[in-house]
Image (cartoon, rainbow, N blue to C red; front, side):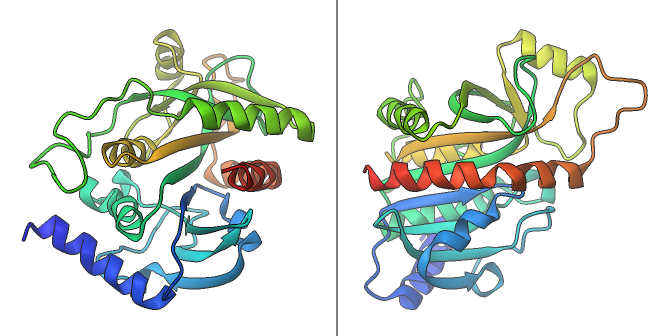
Length: 275
């Protein structure tokens, strides 16, 4: 058996044994500072990553490192309280391992979130952005032998983010009085924050927000025919016209994400209810 396939099924078997008859419908990936949504999951089964075969322990600030299975919005969900990043030294197989494990466990939908810098001049700290498309500058996780049991060699990426889910989220936000933006998410490798010239470049090529994650998970989900909804929390203004004394700070990013997490939690919960 392919080593990657073996690793996926070994992890899935471990999680399945822990959750018994629970069958998750929705997978959720919670980015930097956004883990508090997991606190809203009812009747949770909490599995630390360190217990799951093949799962590393996250090192990024604001990533607790738990897999949480329970009920949210009346549906059984499986949530990652923290993700794995390429910049931590993980291979793309490891970065995307949880998504394939979730697929084996039966999810039909994947909700991804991240903390991102707003390169769009109209975006401000605390804004929520529905991801409409992306620009990938991370290694593609599908490079290498194709895992046929998950999807085709050349998966279509015309609509990586589900149009129906986007429309529902917009309607829910309007109903709840929550302002949301829409835009294109750009992902680079990190871990250094980008230069002002790079921010300008990202804006010129069509990006609205920039981060260091998410897209590999989305590519693997679409390869497996999982519908995806994505949201960025704008945690800093990633511009090229900073004051002389401005410094990007990781703790500030996590704090800004935490402040916006309540609004995102409401949107995710209502959207899951609507499925």
